Length: 444
Image 1 (cartoon, rainbow, N blue to C red):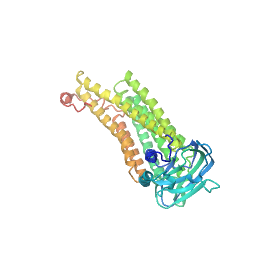
Image 2 (cartoon, rainbow, N blue to C red; image 1 turned 90 degrees about the horizontal axis):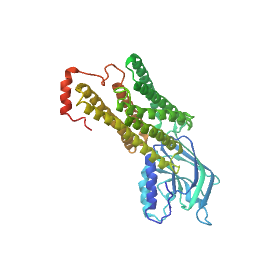
Image 3 (cartoon, rainbow, N blue to C red; image 1 turned 180 degrees about the vertical axis):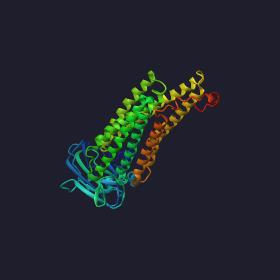
Image 4 (tube, helix red, strand yellow; image 1 turned 45 degrees about the vertical axis):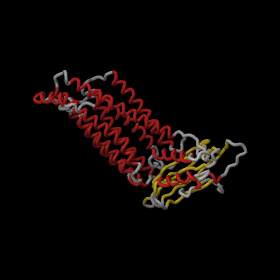
């Protein structure tokens, strides 16, 4: 994010910066709201977004600043402490602030009547302040600097919390049920893993390497869920995750790599249809796995640095680009397999088997598209308009979609002698051949 001159030389420059802030706000969920310490170094941005938090009634925000210093690009410049300070802005107030900025000369967000000032830097022996929230809503914590030529450096300590049963609750109002929700999904995936192990033992002669990789995927998903539950629980009670965030990132890293690897390998038919990968399929894996590594690194940086960091928006753009690239790459093997089976059905005389394979691949393709579309686009779109109090509902929908996707994959590709890949029905061979000739619905 670039530095913007907050004093108006052009009439719409404040609007441009407010739009920039809104773009950042739209990319982040409510803060995990652990107690945070942020270092700002030589920053001249007129607005610095620190956190976004959903407050219940009588929630509280506290901000303290240490080691504050400033420097100016103008010689003999003097600091105007009243032109700097921390404030809260409700999301619904931004359109009104837009109108103010458009019609006011030398507009400063600290002067807006639509913001709640926590404290300004004038007449303060110590730069700190707090505010009791009497109007429940989702607020953004922003540092305003109305001296465009002034660069500031400071250490900022922030605490945001609600009161639940007389105790501090450092989770936003919409995330309070998440510890229990994640634990429920952990129990479900633990049962899932146990059932999968039982099936693999029972069908040991029919196990392929892909089944072991699928089992590892389930294990990492279960471990990620328990780490997410413990992370949120400790944040809710103490404001810090006590190391559970590290475990969450580690298992999430392996889960992400395993998920896309399983999709690619199933899409190629490896281990089911053939014991080897073609050169182009190996190249897809060589692209997807490094992309997943970089995507997870970007995700950790985004989560740990926060929007106050200058490069935070850039890392978000990198994350989105890598995620889109991974989603596009995993479709290639499925498309190749469908085309290969369609062509083979015309020459190998095994119409019934090919029809069964094509049907399975078609369903697999549709489910993968639906899963990625729902979790990447639909959940984000609905989250942006749903009330902040129901943020946990979208998390439940996201995890529910993931569970349904896993159930589809593991049911259709489980180790069994009657795997749809291997079924041959000689009685229906002629009918299947006719269907393949007449029906072009398998074409992409």
